[in-house]
Length: 164
Image (cartoon, rainbow, N blue to C red; front, side, top):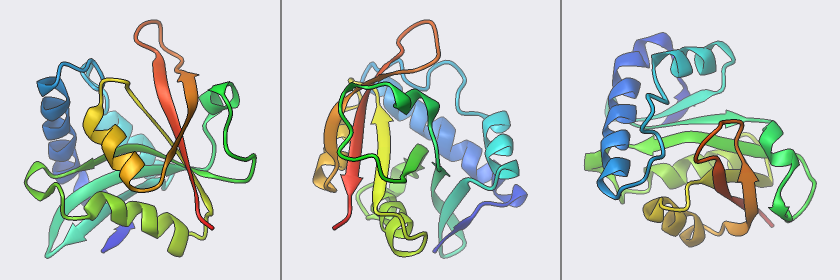
Protein backbone atom coordinates (compact mmCIF):
# COMPACT_ATOMS: atom_id res chain seq x y z
CA UNK A 1 0.00 0.00 0.00
CA UNK A 2 1.38 3.38 -0.98
CA UNK A 3 0.87 6.16 1.53
CA UNK A 4 2.43 9.42 2.60
CA UNK A 5 5.46 8.81 4.76
CA UNK A 6 5.47 9.69 8.44
CA UNK A 7 8.23 10.42 10.92
CA UNK A 8 8.08 6.86 12.24
CA UNK A 9 9.26 5.64 8.81
CA UNK A 10 12.61 7.42 9.16
CA UNK A 11 14.72 4.41 10.17
CA UNK A 12 13.31 2.18 7.42
CA UNK A 13 13.68 4.88 4.76
CA UNK A 14 17.28 5.62 5.74
CA UNK A 15 18.03 1.89 5.43
CA UNK A 16 16.53 1.90 1.92
CA UNK A 17 18.66 4.92 0.99
CA UNK A 18 21.84 3.30 2.35
CA UNK A 19 21.20 -0.01 0.59
CA UNK A 20 20.51 1.86 -2.66
CA UNK A 21 23.79 3.78 -2.32
CA UNK A 22 25.69 0.49 -1.97
CA UNK A 23 23.86 -1.00 -4.97
CA UNK A 24 24.57 2.07 -7.12
CA UNK A 25 28.23 2.03 -6.06
CA UNK A 26 28.46 -1.64 -7.13
CA UNK A 27 28.24 -0.59 -10.79
CA UNK A 28 30.67 2.31 -10.38
CA UNK A 29 28.19 5.16 -10.60
CA UNK A 30 28.96 8.30 -8.59
CA UNK A 31 25.22 8.95 -8.17
CA UNK A 32 24.14 9.10 -4.50
CA UNK A 33 27.74 8.66 -3.30
CA UNK A 34 28.09 12.08 -1.64
CA UNK A 35 25.83 11.51 1.36
CA UNK A 36 22.60 12.30 -0.49
CA UNK A 37 19.84 11.36 0.12
CA UNK A 38 19.99 11.40 3.91
CA UNK A 39 17.98 12.11 7.04
CA UNK A 40 17.76 15.82 6.28
CA UNK A 41 16.50 15.06 2.76
CA UNK A 42 13.78 12.80 4.17
CA UNK A 43 12.76 15.32 6.85
CA UNK A 44 12.52 18.13 4.28
CA UNK A 45 10.42 15.94 1.98
CA UNK A 46 8.26 14.94 4.96
CA UNK A 47 7.69 18.58 5.92
CA UNK A 48 6.62 19.33 2.33
CA UNK A 49 4.42 16.20 2.32
CA UNK A 50 6.10 14.94 -0.84
CA UNK A 51 7.61 11.64 0.31
CA UNK A 52 5.69 8.40 -0.06
CA UNK A 53 6.39 4.85 1.02
CA UNK A 54 5.19 1.50 -0.22
CA UNK A 55 4.34 -0.67 2.78
CA UNK A 56 3.67 -4.39 2.41
CA UNK A 57 2.90 -6.58 5.43
CA UNK A 58 4.14 -3.88 7.84
CA UNK A 59 7.46 -3.55 5.98
CA UNK A 60 8.54 -0.46 4.05
CA UNK A 61 9.59 -1.93 0.68
CA UNK A 62 9.99 1.30 -1.26
CA UNK A 63 10.23 5.06 -1.02
CA UNK A 64 9.86 7.89 -3.52
CA UNK A 65 9.41 11.64 -3.46
CA UNK A 66 6.87 13.28 -5.77
CA UNK A 67 7.31 16.93 -6.71
CA UNK A 68 4.98 19.02 -8.84
CA UNK A 69 7.81 21.13 -10.24
CA UNK A 70 11.53 20.73 -10.85
CA UNK A 71 13.39 23.93 -11.83
CA UNK A 72 16.27 22.05 -13.47
CA UNK A 73 13.73 20.64 -15.95
CA UNK A 74 13.06 24.12 -17.36
CA UNK A 75 16.13 23.76 -19.55
CA UNK A 76 16.70 20.50 -21.42
CA UNK A 77 19.11 19.52 -24.15
CA UNK A 78 16.36 17.85 -26.15
CA UNK A 79 12.61 18.26 -25.74
CA UNK A 80 9.94 17.11 -23.33
CA UNK A 81 7.02 15.24 -24.87
CA UNK A 82 4.62 18.02 -23.84
CA UNK A 83 4.29 21.03 -21.54
CA UNK A 84 1.37 19.67 -19.50
CA UNK A 85 1.42 19.54 -15.67
CA UNK A 86 3.62 16.73 -14.40
CA UNK A 87 4.86 14.94 -11.33
CA UNK A 88 8.58 14.45 -10.88
CA UNK A 89 9.79 11.30 -9.18
CA UNK A 90 12.93 11.79 -7.11
CA UNK A 91 14.77 9.55 -4.65
CA UNK A 92 12.95 6.38 -5.65
CA UNK A 93 14.30 3.10 -4.36
CA UNK A 94 13.11 -0.38 -3.49
CA UNK A 95 14.41 -2.71 -0.79
CA UNK A 96 17.24 -4.81 -2.23
CA UNK A 97 15.53 -8.06 -1.22
CA UNK A 98 12.30 -6.91 -2.90
CA UNK A 99 13.64 -5.93 -6.33
CA UNK A 100 11.66 -7.17 -9.31
CA UNK A 101 8.35 -7.47 -7.45
CA UNK A 102 6.69 -4.42 -8.99
CA UNK A 103 7.00 -2.11 -6.00
CA UNK A 104 8.69 0.69 -7.95
CA UNK A 105 6.11 0.41 -10.73
CA UNK A 106 3.40 0.76 -8.09
CA UNK A 107 4.58 4.34 -7.50
CA UNK A 108 4.07 5.10 -11.21
CA UNK A 109 0.57 3.63 -11.15
CA UNK A 110 -0.24 5.56 -7.96
CA UNK A 111 0.72 8.88 -9.57
CA UNK A 112 -1.65 8.22 -12.45
CA UNK A 113 -4.52 6.35 -10.81
CA UNK A 114 -4.67 8.03 -7.39
CA UNK A 115 -3.09 11.45 -7.88
CA UNK A 116 -4.55 11.79 -11.37
CA UNK A 117 -1.47 12.94 -13.27
CA UNK A 118 -1.04 12.06 -16.94
CA UNK A 119 2.66 13.04 -17.08
CA UNK A 120 5.61 11.81 -15.07
CA UNK A 121 9.16 13.07 -15.43
CA UNK A 122 12.28 11.57 -13.91
CA UNK A 123 16.02 11.80 -14.39
CA UNK A 124 18.90 9.45 -13.73
CA UNK A 125 22.65 9.17 -14.11
CA UNK A 126 23.89 7.77 -17.41
CA UNK A 127 25.62 4.93 -15.53
CA UNK A 128 22.42 3.84 -13.77
CA UNK A 129 21.64 0.98 -16.13
CA UNK A 130 19.09 -0.72 -13.83
CA UNK A 131 17.03 2.49 -13.63
CA UNK A 132 17.33 3.13 -17.37
CA UNK A 133 16.03 -0.40 -18.08
CA UNK A 134 13.20 0.06 -15.57
CA UNK A 135 12.14 3.34 -17.16
CA UNK A 136 12.10 2.02 -20.73
CA UNK A 137 10.28 -1.15 -19.62
CA UNK A 138 7.59 1.01 -18.01
CA UNK A 139 6.93 3.27 -20.98
CA UNK A 140 9.20 6.22 -20.30
CA UNK A 141 10.78 7.99 -23.27
CA UNK A 142 14.29 9.47 -23.17
CA UNK A 143 13.75 13.17 -23.88
CA UNK A 144 17.24 14.59 -23.45
CA UNK A 145 19.73 15.73 -20.84
CA UNK A 146 19.19 18.11 -17.94
CA UNK A 147 21.83 19.82 -15.81
CA UNK A 148 21.66 19.69 -12.02
CA UNK A 149 22.63 22.62 -9.82
CA UNK A 150 25.87 21.07 -8.62
CA UNK A 151 29.46 21.72 -9.70
CA UNK A 152 30.48 18.21 -10.79
CA UNK A 153 28.83 15.20 -12.40
CA UNK A 154 25.75 17.30 -13.07
CA UNK A 155 24.33 15.83 -16.29
CA UNK A 156 21.31 13.53 -16.05
CA UNK A 157 19.26 11.65 -18.60
CA UNK A 158 15.71 13.00 -18.57
CA UNK A 159 12.71 10.77 -19.21
CA UNK A 160 8.97 11.33 -19.47
CA UNK A 161 5.96 9.04 -19.44
CA UNK A 162 2.60 10.19 -20.78
CA UNK A 163 -0.49 8.18 -19.90
CA UNK A 164 -3.03 8.01 -22.72
